[in-house]
Image (tube, rainbow, N blue to C red; front, side, top):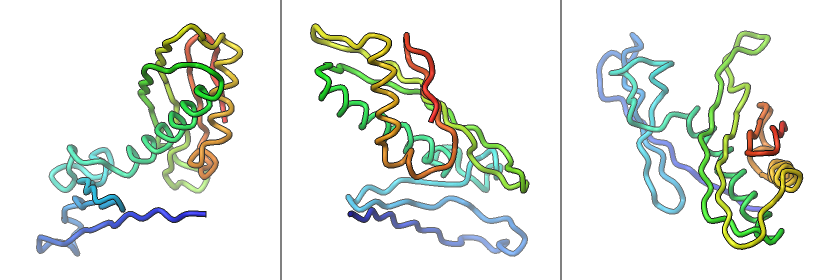
Length: 160
């Protein structure tokens, strides 16, 4: 259907690579031209070998799920006749070990706060359905095996 490209660049700038003492800082360049500083998570590789100010793959994974859910939700809300004035989410991913002992993001919890304008606002049942449908139609959510939970006001949690 479509392709999406990211160029990842890293260069060794030291002499201790074989001892494991090398910077994990690198860049991500996206097809629109934006370059983002990236690094391993400081919780995985301690500074100064990681850059806490850069985006790490775990944060990007969580942000990708949250962003996709939001964009799908906004589309569905508009189609349902609901005016969304703002959407804020503090998404949280949990890094745990699987049965084989390998680390993975086992759960992502989305905590959207949505402000509606206009005269029509979703009730608890409609809100729950909007989030359920957004999860089902989100390309990223359908691409991962992690559990995704959406905590939303007045309608309980939706798990996918």
